[in-house]
Image 1 (cartoon, rainbow, N blue to C red):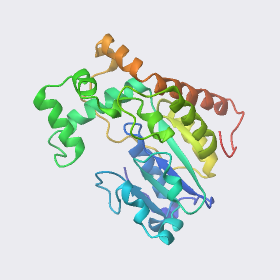
Image 2: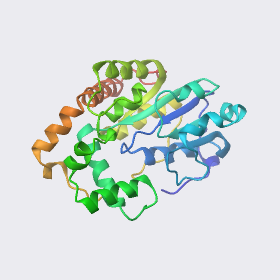
Image 3: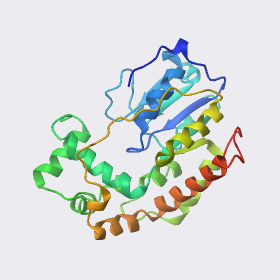
Image 4: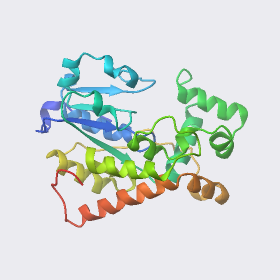
Length: 267
């Protein structure tokens, strides 16, 4: 995506730090690149595990960034949970994006397969090599190896519940995730309704966003209709909390799209 000089774009007026919790395979790269054009280079920071982004740091190292530097940030994006605000000195608010849980899990699997050998030194590359070399299906990879990232990963991020073993997510995690949206989030976007979601985010920030393009689109993945129905049912049952969370975020977006809440501070 072509980056525009920040001087050509309207600057958000908020004083608080915008924390973009990028849940994997929820169009986060595209949204991140659109948002970072609104802020000066020294106002933004990226937090990723295996970063290829200039200036990014590991999320675990964020607390080691000098406090005066953290206090100056206005936009932080990365793969972190809804507890990062505890290390941000100034007032902050989260945004994140959600996606149909079944499609997100399938996208993650085919994403790893596509990147095998392309990013061999990263976890994405190593996961892809494992899948291809062992000939692992989505079922064998996700369920056989009990990959946490296919198990209610949206609720895990937003509830900030760490260390929950595969297949043991509980209803109270969903309750906590919904509470965190109410208490800590400025906006939650829905990937399948990106135009409406961007309008909600623009209302929150008080600016127009540059175009939100599409990145990391895998044209080699199989459509959901081509996957085994039994496999889809198995993924759906495992992700019952993410399913409920996804429905709740769609319902909130329905309210905004009906014109009963544009411009409000929170949902």
